[in-house]
Length: 119
Image 1 (cartoon, rainbow, N blue to C red):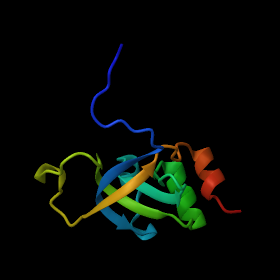
Image 2 (cartoon, rainbow, N blue to C red):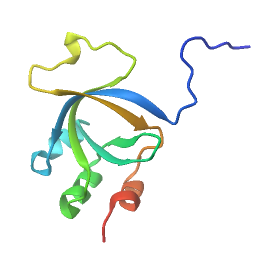
Image 3 (spheres, rainbow, N blue to C red):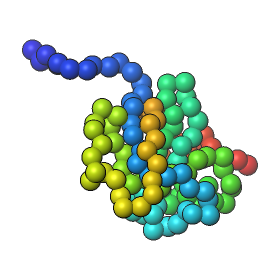
Image 4 (spheres, rainbow, N blue to C red):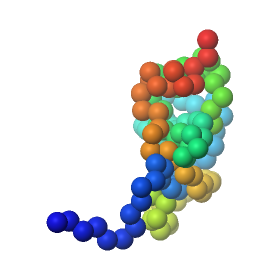
């Protein structure tokens, strides 16, 4: 029998700390997307926010359709229960943002188009 100790949750969301900054569509570039630094903040599902890493396809659709999503350039995404150390903070201006992220986040271009696409 396995016994789990510590915090156990049946929640459909998780708390995270974003170390980065909000950007607008003019700051969006292919290199940052390829490097995995660009994230979208979408709808609140009532169980946390749809916060997910951008793919090139998502970034192109966003740029072409001017979708109503918040962009972030993320230096680090930390589990909310972890301490932040000086090694987590880059040598550039950033924001430290606490966010509750849905565990049912957008994970494909199809879901992205279905959820956020406009015709």
